[in-house]
Image (cartoon, rainbow, N blue to C red; front, top):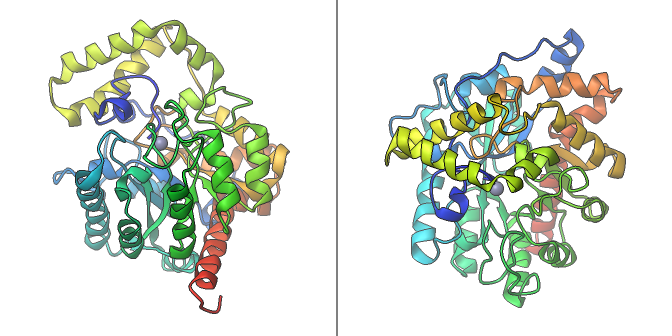
Length: 410
Ligand SMILES: [Zn+2]
């Protein structure tokens, strides 16, 4: 979840976020070489908020939907082989309620996998992702988006790990009691002593430390304490778009130096400086979009999910907000690759939790990324690393660290 505009600010307000527009454009034509490379690769997306839809008993992930960005038919069409379902509740919800709601979402993901055994396989290790791919299934994984969901209890963290959670974002948009967020006032100068214990326990449990959303100092502390590589599950490059949620060049270099991966976020407010500037210059637009969405939907949250983004796109089409093209995703990938090489960059779309650029409305558009990287002269092997190989490498390193810390032979 990464929205910055809209009835969108759900993150802060505790509302559900609007999903992508209904008016999805058809994927652009790609070369045969790109098609072949893409569909023989293991393509992994490390951040999807589709989980919020899974909570609706009427929603079926197995059928194609005219709205939102992700369902099984569209993952198949886009060659998506691994998806991290985000377990997300707003940071304002803490304590037992946070744990209950996180468990409800973990259950929803696991029930969805159980309902679609021919298409989905729960994956807790890199090898299980590879096995799912060999068997023609989509690997389903889980990441907890916000350390507030452990309710300051390492036992809860261990329980999430036992249920299959394989990364945890240390904060969401608000500070936790033990870590500063990039979008809240600093309260702890990064990680507290308990926050460092959380990172150590994540290392032991084989839960990857995710530094998307955290304050820069929290990132530095987590990098220093963690014995395993870290990821930014859905962050882009601050040099190209000055959002606190994005990573500076120095942070990307430090992350890479410890073997980690920045998974590029497709949210328009993190990709495009012009869009951010327009947002900042016209705060009234956010209020108008929110009001229009409320007018269309009343208190119907599932309606808001769809309509909010439609309204935003109407503003773009009327020229009131800049139009952001999907090719900016490629610019962020390329910037990070030029900084640290192709071993440290991946994909973390934020589908179903953010505003997607034109031409990347849903998972069916993913092969365009492979095509664009080939056109830029990237090698097949570098593209395969970016598509998913780097994520698998980090998972293996995290698994080996966990085994070592638990006294097993790696
Ligand atoms: Zn997020």
